[in-house]
Image 1 (cartoon, helix red, strand yellow):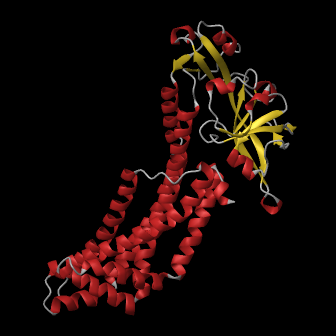
Image 2 (cartoon, helix red, strand yellow):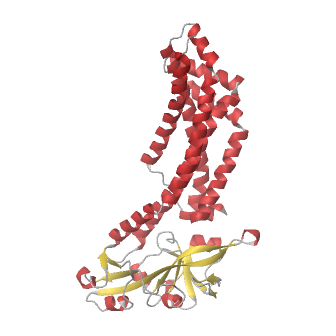
Image 3 (cartoon, one colour):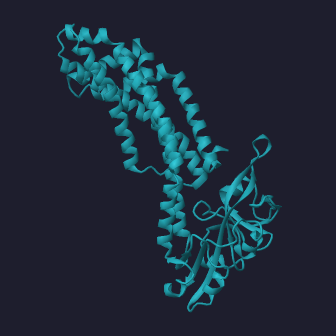
Length: 407
């Protein structure tokens, strides 16, 4: 069910899955610490004396004090898993929507107006020289029942009301129809995205109960199921069927095939399909503030926990660090050993956190967008750098304070 969630439902489902994995990491922490310490310590043995000493110390800690090592790793896993899941879930949905929008809009011109287009915009555009088709789009939202039994709920679905006959949208949009045909689109007949159809357990020929924007209930027939819902609209219906049921009756977008840009400027701002897709993608990124804020808040709590835990871990090892000095290790060698240990902790936390995020995102984005998660390398790189810097800073500063004290 979580793999078919969208929007806020997807965020909630993703956080629930991450929390489940984090519970598993917490319960199995000592075992995970032993395995990871043994695995990650192997390549460190070839990086010099300090790294070899850090590897040996990590293996010793893994055997004798696995809980302490696990407590150092877990907060970094938490920070990486939560932040990656929230941020990359949004980037995946935005990337998929942008690709579908660019492939789906086949119109030569896109006319928009923030205040709404004239009521007769589609008719006026159709009369312009060289125009082969003009379709106005009224953007709104309907409620669709999804799930069954105790999991039944009403899911908001982005909806476009199209002007003209059922065959008109095919001139300006390629919805990637999988079943049925848009030719029968009209009063009492709708088309919908395949993911939404699967969630509602409905298909071509079925009647689907809907709740219109003014809470009017209707039960139209599904005449087509298509694949580019996330980029265009998850429900497509006759424009006239929405008349009187929406707060604003003005179309927000006009798609025009053929004609010239000059002939359409009187109707609103005119751009091409690529420019329109770029603008929509920019708006979607600006609207990501909620996901980013949630990621920052949860990541911030995890960072505080990680810093506190790592500092306390170092302070708990004061006798061990001073013993190393007494047996002949220099302060620089001890600090180098601690930095390598920090790198090990950060690497383990980053790998486990990334694995949890991947295990959450892959099935979810596959169900929502039909594709793998989209992870921008610079963003993931910043997470990796932050994890390493966090571990190094939280260990190095208290360690310096400990080593400055007189033995």
